[in-house]
Amino acid sequence: MIKLHNVTKIYPGGEHALRNANITIDEGDIFGIVGKSGAGKSTMLKLMGLLTQPTHGHIEIFGKRVEAIKGAEANSIKKNIGTVFQGYNLLMQRSVAKNIAFPLELAKHKKQYIDERCAELAALVGLSDKLGAYPAALSGGQKQRVAIARSLATQPKILLCDEPTSALDSFTTKEILNLIRDINAKLGITIVIITHDIGTVKAVCNKTAVLDEGLVVEVGPTDEVLTNPKNPATRRLLDI
Image 1 (tube, rainbow, N blue to C red):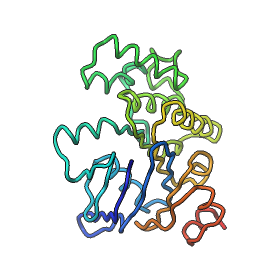
Image 2: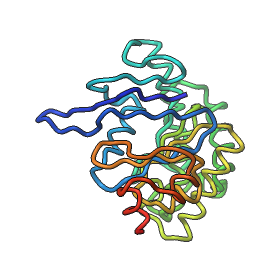
Image 3: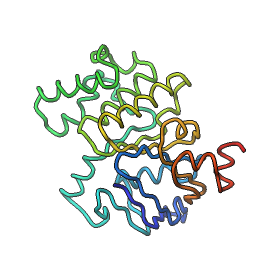
């Protein structure tokens, strides 16, 4: 579903954010990408979300090399990728319902469909009683639920989550991770989680890649990566 083939990303000034990265994410995975700050996680997320292009190597999404497609075909792929941003990125002057509805309004869906879809998604994330509330009145966990619902509005096949629990307490983190697991099970959506927290990938991800200074130093089933770490960077994250 998502494949990175020898992907290198060099920013202006010569910074190598990624070096020869190889990752395969299969349909239905909850795939964790973990590493310390500056490891290259955000760059990898931008590449998967088609927000930037690799300097070298190539990326396949849905079996298509993304650097080779443009126009309507590229837009079609983008519509099948939802993103949950770090910091929620909610529109503060819009209600919960209007935040969820925003991508559907941009896609010019009819009001009846938008209303029905918002109600469906609010129920999915446990916010049916908050549709008329505004972000300022919500807790951090509730804001993240709105952000997740909005990212699912257009029925994407891939959901990218950028540090989805970094601003939450431990109890709310557990709730959000349970929600992510439920969404994966109920909708069959492929989920990629970018995080610095080894506990997050341990709790919810079936596969994990460890990044260190732009390199993919380990990748495989989460249990295997975490119980038998082969790279010093992984052992440092595990504090062993």
